[in-house]
Image (cartoon, rainbow, N blue to C red; front, side, top):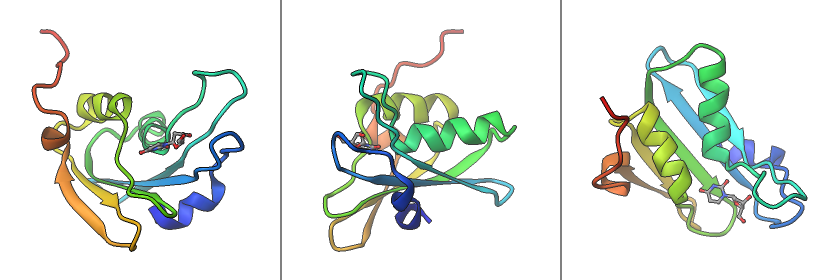
Length: 119
Ligand code: THU
């Protein structure tokens, strides 16, 4: 689903489409794409699109997140790692490789010593 979502990416500046698919504990899946903007800094990555879509639809329990780029190794950026950790500190992450395979890891491995919500 992450691969398929890529076709909806809005990336006229980078020309680098990214797709994500977020699996919730109840089986629901939310996809996301990167949505860029002419104003620097207003763009959003595919991973955050998927997470924000899910939260805004009332889903809060996330199991797995896959991310896919067309021709490059796809690795979540630092900002996305922090957002993923906030909402799903135990989530599994599947990161796409150029050959179509996925590397399996966890957000805890991608963001060691993460800043956590105080209190
Ligand atoms: N991007 C993502 O959406 N997710 C990633 O994991 C890596 C990067 C986006 C940000 C930007 O729209 C483009 O890919 C790279 O410039």
